[in-house]
Image 1 (cartoon, one colour):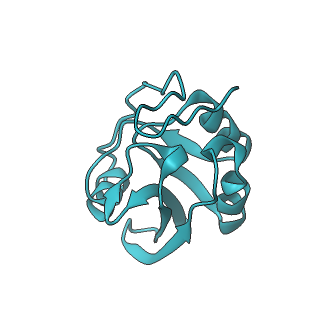
Image 2: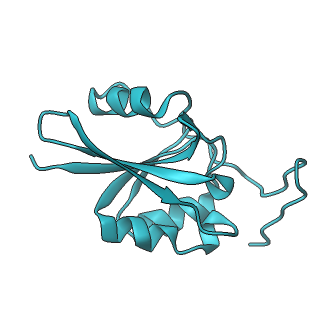
Length: 127
């Protein structure tokens, strides 16, 4: 097995609750023994995550998995088209989350955000 790259929408060192509005992405590289060997911080592009170029940026970096908190179907579809698997319902410390994923103890919640209405800023992506 070769190295794997994992991206996580991040706020500080915690998983951001919503993919499309995160401050940055943490990209972790794991070796074949499931040890994290590199950590990069990628600033989030402006605008809605599903309409930004973040999927192609992450794909070019070699990312194959997105560990996300809340994420909509539009963003999941864009990431999938770029060869990035999404695991939803993630939370907590970014490094611990990655370790849990590498150990095989994370399960996709199966729940996507069904809308883009947010009471905090009135943001709406009209898909």
